[in-house]
Amino acid sequence: MTDELRRKVAEAIDEHGPGIIDTADQIHKRPEIGFQEKFASQLLADRLKLNGFEVEKPIGGLETAFRATKRGKGPGPTIAVLAEYDALPAIGHGCGHNLIAASGLGAAIGLGQVMDQLDGTFQIIGTPAEEGGGGKVILAEAGVFEGVDASLMIHHAGPYTGSSTEYPGGTCLAVSHYSFTFHGKPAHAAGDPYNGANALNGVIKLFTGIDAIRQHVRTDARIHGIISHGGDAPNVVPHRAEARFYIRAGDQAYLEVLERKVKQIAEGAALMTETRVEIKQEGPTCYDMRPSYVLGRRYEANMREVGMTVYQGARANERGP
Ligand SMILES: [Zn+2]
Image (tube, rainbow, N blue to C red):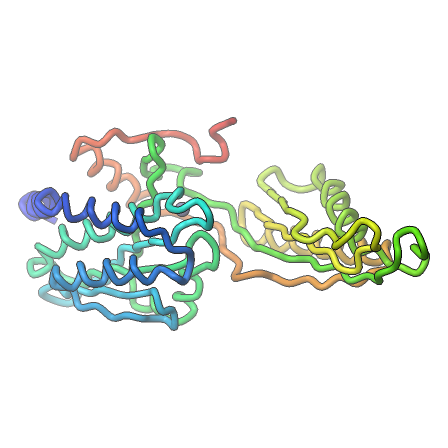
């Protein structure tokens, strides 16, 4: 892009600054959790339409997903900027997805001004449920990203906001979510405990079994869980108990190894406690992220050019306590 076009983009964003910030504020004031982002997705769709984008909503079978498109003067690559807008349950916009949404709108307003002088197609894709639910995975499976040559997104990080310019910056562990429901047999805990099968014991053995393998997994493995149901009353042998775990690894292949180990431990825990375990994956697996450092370096140079302070550091989980 020529310097003149780049200047036009920056000017348009400056000119619309208050509207872009207002969009972030409005979404922040009305937090909506994954798949329920009716207000946020409609606000963005309306503002993109106002700025000359052709908006399709809903897309990919998700009510709060949308695609806004502006075509250039001739054929060329299709570049998409992704906008997230879901909040965290009970917290609100603690992760700043309202800013991701406003940044997408800002990119649309800036580039929208010059698309008639560029080749290719520019899109903003609104992606719901990123705090959980895997919105982008659902959209990818529905074919929303077919024909898209590159996708870009910014996730702000307060004073740590920067751009990934070299490995391992910008990478992310692969993750899958599982629930383990142990089914036992109720009995009175003092009257006839010998007739019971203790589902909570199954859950406890699952935790201790996972702890026993921690020495024998790669350093980038993360296996963390909670007991989501531990029984109903102390005087009743728990007939149902449930744990939920997230399993993470540096790459998808090793994640599968860990999943196999954890499932085997769950089966072992059930065998030990004469219970039965039901293992369910919750939502789709997210693969490890592999950023483009070429784009990252360009992004950083542009951030410096507009006078931003750029954070340069290791990825979040190497920052220390
Ligand atoms: Zn986030």
